[in-house]
Length: 437
Image (cartoon, rainbow, N blue to C red; front, side):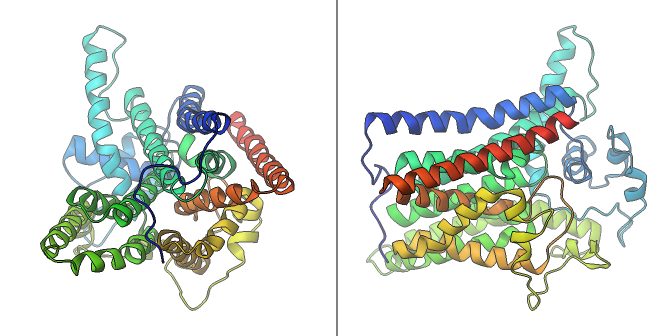
């Protein structure tokens, strides 16, 4: 398969009109989630509202304020967490409150809490109406939620950059924007961003960008270190996201091997790979510390403590239900995010481009989809969330579909109307949730 040209110029020439369209789509991609997040916060008054969000957030709050991994007092203090006593009673063998959620989201929240704590201190010092420095007042919730929203946006921008190297730039920008606005990403990146899903989209998208840049420009210490950071954070954000590591594995193994065989390049490859491994290990360290403190082991399947229909929520690789993620009435893509089906069709067609990076994206998506079909939960906050980490792949696939459709007017009209209909339907559905609260 081809390695492709070095990262940089668009592979499809652009006229002035399409250049303006691309820039407008990118501006909307940045401003849209930010405005939705700001509006929802102003309307509801707080950003941490659902049980999962409390579990993610109390980890970071406990680390910052208490310097420990005991979340009991954090749960009792959390405003609106009415069922906290039920969860506080559920303890690990070491006596800690059981928190089966990964630490990656809390690792993003930790520096944001530090920023919010400083803003709260400045607010109080200015003589304004005092705000408690408790980790839950307005600055903490707004800064944390907006930070996660921006991380999700960064992931989508990274995916746009990757897609623009293979497809039309305007198509890549429109695909990234439509994938956000027309799928469940509009909720999890622009509304309930303190879930793990915005961070999941962010890290997977950035990992794809680092992977493609290394594959095109050759291994460098800087980009391999960045890849280690993005891959490590991907693993500790959502456990199933580990399957997306197939993207760099499939895309970069031939590249690293070819560089290794060149005279004088062995040290360069060794140091770069070592830097990536060290960075990924550093990212996993907080998860290992929490696991040891709570369960006595640095590696533990925390999701084994979660029951779905009376059995542990662990993967059963021998019993997939391949249609359920598509047709389930509450959480299936066909019901909750039909635009993702168009992106999925594009993803499955990527190998025909005979580009190793695009094939790697398809491989990562297929295995991730298979894993989700093996443990599919029937409940959700909004639409489909179990394939949220596939959002970057959907955007790349949709960019391919849009580029393909532009070659004939009838295809452009058909695909364009389909995308607009899906985005409009999602907007109506999302508005019903926002204004219904």
